[in-house]
Length: 474
Image (cartoon, rainbow, N blue to C red; front, side, top):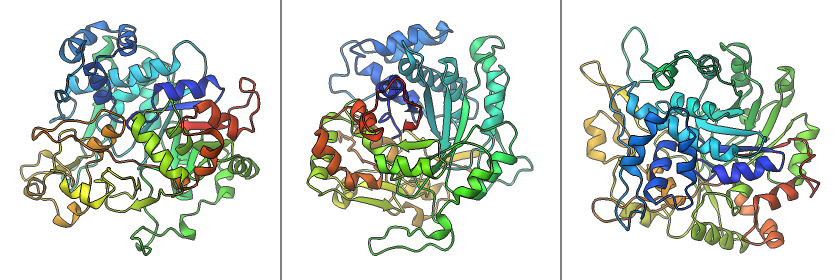
């Protein structure tokens, strides 16, 4: 539910119902400036920015990006892609993006709110975390990689100290790996103590759970155990790759997490992937879980960030039993399998994908690599092929790769108009539960609310007194 599908509206609604509402922390700088350029008609973004504790950072952002009358068909101004590590201008945009989303999700109530980030997206991580912490975020969730340095980073940020993360650089030959550094005092002007949020890594193996529970600096407070039926990025299958007749990676017994081993670690856990039903919640509780994380049902609720017309189209197709989800081993530039809903008019259709002119103008999934002079460059398997090859990339890595950055922004109504006049088209990611959502839609209709989802999952119990069992979004 990344790139604003799990937005502040959805997280706030779920939080008010006594559960853990989770906002996406992906591309929050771009989400922020595009909302401003679309006129911020209700003034909510500007209200959140007015509460930011260090106002001297806010004024230049409003001056550059806020357009009271909206864009009127013009392309979005882009946030510059960082060309060097530790760029303060980029860091403050990540801080403001994380702050605004969490501030709006938590505004006016005392419920729990979390933020979900992708470990693979390294450069925005520390700034986004700090912005979320300034707004009082309660939980941090991270998957799509091994977030082993995050617990210590949260400790450092909460104490107002400089935090750092190792940057994964392909081909790095130096003695010491490059690191990303974030000094809160460069933003706040002085050391400032903040609440340290709970950390829930998203894992898909017992070995990773053990590593994170026992061998990291800092502490974790539990796990989200995600199976391969979940939407977005999936962990690759263990062992030699095997594919089914549709070309999807095949998962086997080695990919099943042993919950008895998880319970032995003594930390709470939530199950994710194919859990969007009361029966799945009951099964999870019976297996010792604290609850479930649910994405697909909430993703198509009225409160989610999916563009309204696209949302309704997907649900109508699903209600007829005509939607299929494909675990695409090639779509993501990261190399991780990526769930794609096959929807007419989106990049899931080969002919639509082939018509798109390749461009990389957002760069969240770029791969850092060492260039000949020892410096760090950036490349993306979804950028123009000749550019990728000139940077030392392998031609085989470009096959079938899609620009998730632009496509997922288009799916939430923030699609760019490129220089050649072409509008960016969406790509829809959903868990396998989308193929089974017809029963739910038959009961609640295509314009259902997040409240309907919570009522369905909890057996329509009274909300405010309900124990927190659901993690919604991510």
